[in-house]
Image (tube, rainbow, N blue to C red; front, side):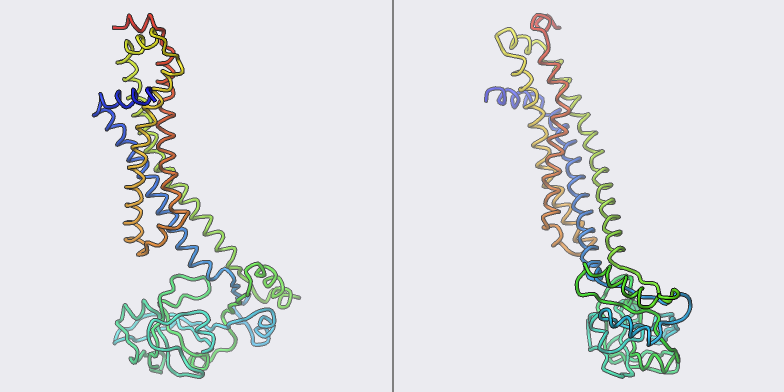
Length: 372
């Protein structure tokens, strides 16, 4: 198309100015693409972790009393239930004293909640222990060593895999012992919490209501925390953060749009006589408008594609450095931001070129030819 060729020629005549306009678009699109990918990757990573507990309920005693065995049996009739005892205590690890959280659990329940990195899980009635990954790293603990806790020195038979902060238990900086050993050390009765695992996530609300109906008939005995609601709330928070990051990138594109507007306005002024000649030989207003819009489109397309490629590369580096995982980069929702960036870049360019194009197309031929 002849007017597309005119547009390319006009941009080539002012290479430096065109390059500066393209750089502005590149920066804006790079920011949108990279920040969008980062925000989406973080959201996917968090969602992946949280969805693992989305079908859980955590039951706490109302007040200071523990959950009794009788009440635990009522909870167990609703769904699979895991009783947990917990106590903050001092422990000596590799000769250093530190404060840790001690969890007492039935041996068969530990693999249902946690994964091991080394060693083995506790056996029934074991007087040994397992330690969290961060605790093991911080104090250079190995399988076979001992941890001094209360008056006992249980042998470490397993190191737990890193789990991160949870809403049920936080094992990374904790020591896990059997329920039998926990009772012998602290002489406690009842449970500090009960983790309820519901088979289907859509049945969570019903399970919560049934537990409350069974235990809170006359007075409030327990509080039931639905982790699904927390998961959805956190997802919403990270979605807001992603939108905020996109907004930061969009500001860069607004600056780039002003730059293109300036370039196109200068081009219109400099080519006033040329436009007058074209109008005098029969070029229509629509064709003049189209030629100037083609110029904006070319600037936006070149800047958008380059910016998206650089943004994708930046997103890859950030994912590897921050999340230590590049798989989220290739998720469809992350790839989408490449096209979103290009669309924003092209759209900003075309919108910025609308007024200069309209002004050029409405120049009167006689006045344009007289312009000095």
